[in-house]
Length: 259
Image (cartoon, rainbow, N blue to C red; front, side, top):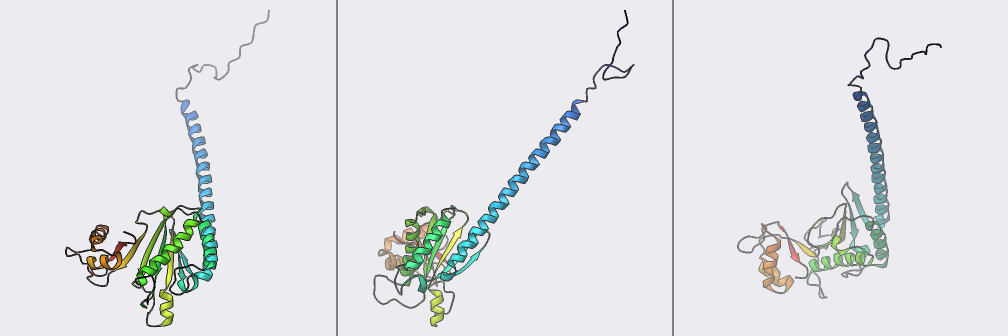
């Protein structure tokens, strides 16, 4: 009977048959390398998707600005789009009623806004020409009403009212000389600022820029019909009204549009 042959696998003659206890380090290292490569691929894909999203948003921003060009000027920054509309184009003289063409462009604006969730600030501005008769007490209230009418159209088009802020500045924030017709035309404007994020702030208030030490009792009586609303004004503007109820010089305060 022939002798069976003996084969030895895994070690040379004379070597110990015990397994090296550090061999697990090799497997562990390979696993960590594979995991690192996997997460690098995930990060790369995520970064590429984010870049594509940013580029798509920039394109959307530029398309909107292009559509609004015939109604006014615009500027895009990282966190907002600001458009200034000439009131002479979008409103009739001394009227808060929007033109039909502007109604149509606000549909385009609304379609853009539905793709985001940021706050939209609508600011009305007027020239310094006093109003003669009519339903408005002064240019201040007319500017606020015009801002509100723009907001109303956006609401009709499906924009959440909680995203909208309306500001009435009247003639207090001019950008040109009110002594010329050209300057007055530039001062009659609506500014729409479309923010990328939503901010917490009162929704329907008038912003009043004080030129001196106006008394809030007088403002409450003149614009809101009763001095009792001076306490409401004071509560809205901490640090901007002194102990005697006078507005600090150059302070910009909030006054409720409908207290």
